[in-house]
Image 1 (cartoon, helix red, strand yellow):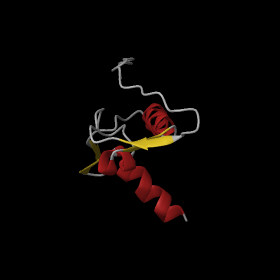
Image 2 (cartoon, rainbow, N blue to C red):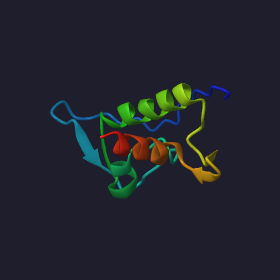
Image 3 (spheres, helix red, strand yellow):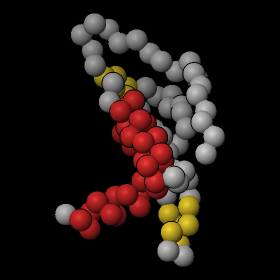
Image 4 (cartoon, one colour):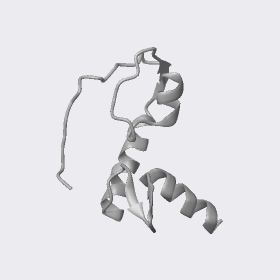
Length: 89
């Protein structure tokens, strides 16, 4: 994996009493954006934690969050981790 750090200029300032907001213009890299942002344009300070978690999963597993081969089938890393988590509970 080759590390890439970029600033897409997507940052928004919240008003002092806000911690979340909505947008009709969803931009970013699929696979690293939180589901609530992709589906509904709802963003908050929690989105960075989701994206960081995806990066940590990539580092720990050595797999990219794209289609990868596992056990003869293609899966996305987040789906694979969800399945493992579900079966361990």
